[in-house]
Amino acid sequence: MRLSGIRIVLVQTTHPGNIGAAARAMKNMGLERLCLVDPASFPHADATARASGADDLLAEATVHATLEEALVGSHLVFGASARLRTISWPQVTPREAARQTADLEEGSEVALVFGREHSGLTNRELELCHCLLHIPANPAFSSLNLAAAVQVVSYEMRLAMEQPRLPASEEGGETAAATAEELAGFYRHLEQALLEIGFLDLANPRQLMRRLRRLFNRARLERMELNILRGILSAAQKSSRRP
Ligand code: SAH
Image 1 (cartoon, rainbow, N blue to C red):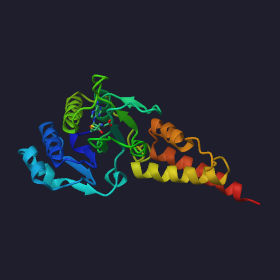
Image 2: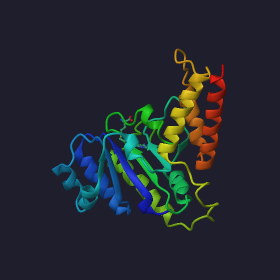
Image 3: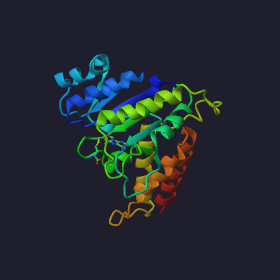
Image 4: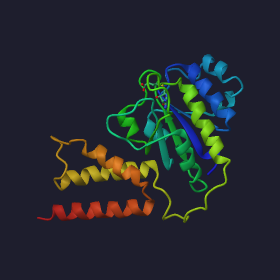
């Protein structure tokens, strides 16, 4: 896994200056791929000014309408959050996230997602992430400036990538990690099947889908495993349709 496989995703950034400062933080650490989801104003002179020399990253930055779109192709997604959530997501420090990233096989894609200055990431957006990434900070004042958070995480990524790699696990198509869009397709199928077999009651859903997502995200499904699960869902749907 190389630094070039890492993308930084900024969701609905309000201040263009923060986008520029994040680009600078990235370039200092050797990261290159910046993805912006529905930024308030971009391109913008404040972004260019704060990038001070990292404006090539701004020129290459991609702009997306939705977080889903910005995550296409990623195998592992970390959502950076200043707050601890009521539902307990698997949570890592930047160092652990960097270790997990460094251990991925060559050619893997990792997304690091950062939220809005005022309100962070929504629970719905965090559900698209495998892990919540929290920078341990003063509990009474835990919210870092957006670009400062990008800096800390990028630094840990750089440090970890320079460490010798653990022996690679089995490689190849079947054991390849499922991508974000494959997982999204699986969750849609799961929800539909649970409705059809009468397990999911829309009148009383009780966070079932969120809990199931958390379970399967924790498992880091391989493509082959995901296909087996989809096969099981199809078989259950078929038998529930029999008269
Ligand atoms: N007021 C917001 C925080 C916004 S800070 C809130 O309460 O959620 C902007 C973004 O920087 C956050 O969405 C997060 O992605 C990142 N960030 C700031 N402090 C962080 C921390 N301690 N750990 C992880 N990410 C952090």
